[in-house]
Image 1 (cartoon, rainbow, N blue to C red):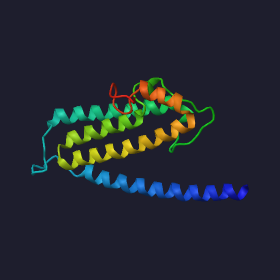
Image 2: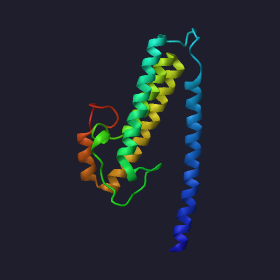
Image 3: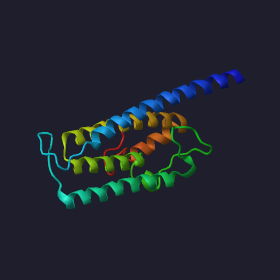
Image 4: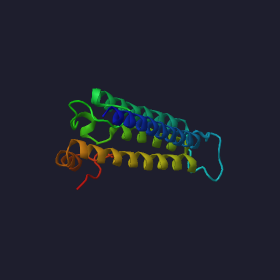
Length: 174
């Protein structure tokens, strides 16, 4: 029995390391796309200019997105972790931000990313935001599969029918 746990621990560490490296590389790639300066760029990749007032409005939206993330993190309390794992007394949280969307941390991140893309007004900024959306949607689906299995399909499916995944007041699961 002990050797099984050691094997599981070793494979888990290697798996976590490879997932961490992959996430780091994706993060760096997206950061490069989003970090390309756009304030003085007027080439064919520029889609729009937001001006000073628009840029400050985007900063407010970014702060609101990160604030939503923080509220969700605080609301989860001890049930939050950096990776999906079963906790003692694990249950479906459907109050606070989790009553608005099933993945409020991802929603807040996406709000901030799209505000950044809007402020940049470039094809590269918008492309980076779309890539970020695809990645977080994929991650959300994997987490939902795990949560459904761990917490029970009946309970989790009822939650999915009541609360949209990423967009407040958006489509719900059937």
